[in-house]
Image 1 (spheres, one colour):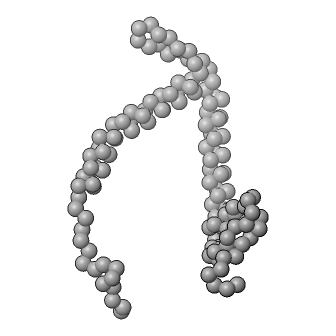
Image 2 (image 1 turned 90 degrees about the vertical axis):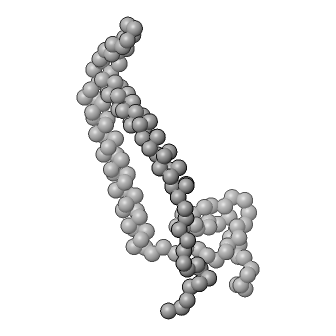
Length: 136
């Protein structure tokens, strides 16, 4: 093909970083810049993907087993005479979520203060710019 003339792929697949996007509406211009990934790198990505899925499945099964072992009902007595009855795992889950929210709320003032300090900090002036680079 002549340089500068885009190639087209009718109803084909165009690859972006190893993932295919299938075209359903006519032809897609091909810029000729398809990214080639070595088979070894692709295999490592697949292994890591499967290990991640296995870890998620293991955590899910552990939480499911914990929930099944703690399914008996408990009673929660609150102020003003409110009584709530629910399975123990629901109560433990709510306590966990409330603890996480309390921790995040306690962290917010520090987070905003640090972001404000970063925004006020002067940007250091570089002695070399992109145009000052000299060949070695």
